[in-house]
Image 1 (spheres, rainbow, N blue to C red):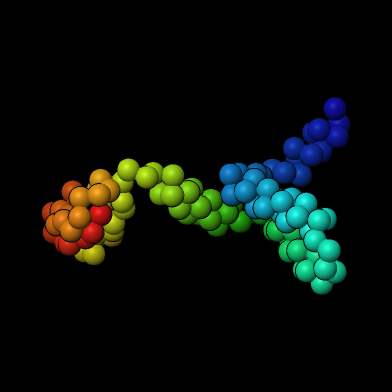
Image 2: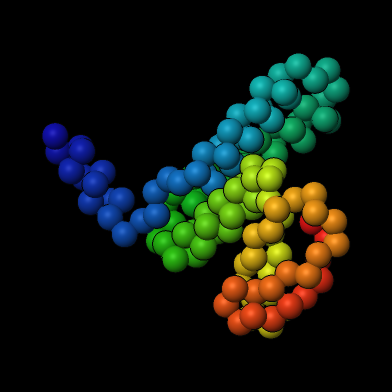
Length: 125
C-alpha cells in the first residue's frame, strides 16, 4: 500500500502514457525483435540501439513534467493518424484563417469554401 502511494506521489505532475507513447514503445519492441533475426552484426547493433533509443524516448515522455508539450505532440500524432485512417475524405487548410476543411475524396479539381471565413480556394480531392 505504501509503495502505491509513493508511486502516485512520484507521478504527480508528470505526463504518463498516451497513444504516441504506445506507438513508440511498440516500434521499439518490433525493432528489437527484428534485430534478433538479422545475421549481420553491424545491422543488428544499429537496430538494437535504435530500439533502445525508442524505448528510452517513451520512458522519457512518460516521466516528463512538461505536460503541455507532450500533450501537443500526442495531439499532432493523433491528427496525423486520423487523417491516414480516414480514406473517404481529404483534408485542406484554409490559406486565410488556417481552419482545417474536410472534403470528400475522388471529386477531382474543386473549389473549396472555408466554413469559417468563406474564402474560396482550389484543391484536388
